[in-house]
Length: 415
Image (cartoon, rainbow, N blue to C red):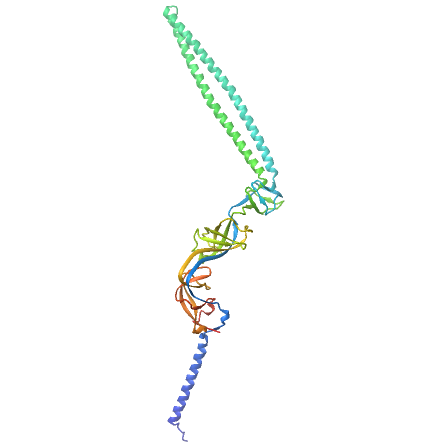
């Protein structure tokens, strides 16, 4: 049986059909693969769009904070005791000697009585010692006087014997004997004089020792009296009693915090500055603090060296008078003025923009229907604006919203 062979024309037709089918399949595959890279469509109303401008850029840092007293006095317990009564409520104005709390401790009262008795005993011992030493000194001085009197008699007798010996009435032996007695009395008088001097030194030493014991008893009495007096807790300084941390019946230990007093007319603004901007803050920069009842001027007085919770604490000293209603713990808004940049291109500060670093921005093209990603170089920053040193021209519209969800795309289509 004969098999018909296809003609050359038929073979060419089949190859053409196969080639077209392959091309269509390849195009379909490329279209499917290309769907993931198509520019996403974004509603214009969902984006924050603004224009780059050239001119002056006022650099200032905005930060929230509270007013805090510049002088705070914590009142602590002078000894372990029990709270009996609170005499003044928090919020009251107090003077330095205003009683705030009344504490009780019977042991301190007993210790005060013992200290008083010990001081009285030390006073009595000192007086008795002085009397006894004075009597002994008199005895020593009497012996010294007797020795000096005997010396004078021996000298007179020796002189008389000398004249008698010269006249032939006294023998040489009697003269020598009188001279020996005179020498003995002179030595005895010298010894008694030395004894009196030594006794005076001993007397002074004993009196000093007794005075030291008396001073020790007086110091113990002063401490006991101070501890007893601390049972009536006083403010210690004029101001406002901000808080009382104990209640009647509560037991407190020595050194425990009882209350806090602060001056309401001497306040600081304690601002929380974002750590990325805190590096530009220095002492002495001008600050404007809005207390929501007026704006008060001041200047940076202290910068905390540590970062806490992404912020740096900056204290601003405020110039009096303070607006009405300014009080400790009042929430305020502060603006720290860093300076002014002239003739620069700046934009409202977009999300995730890092000062003095590179970044990406979507710039509107084709009449605003398409946003193209470009590379820019940022400069100095403020709380609400940032300088653009390269990559952007004045007047260009840019997307300032957070565009991190479109990091895989270089183009956005706006609708």
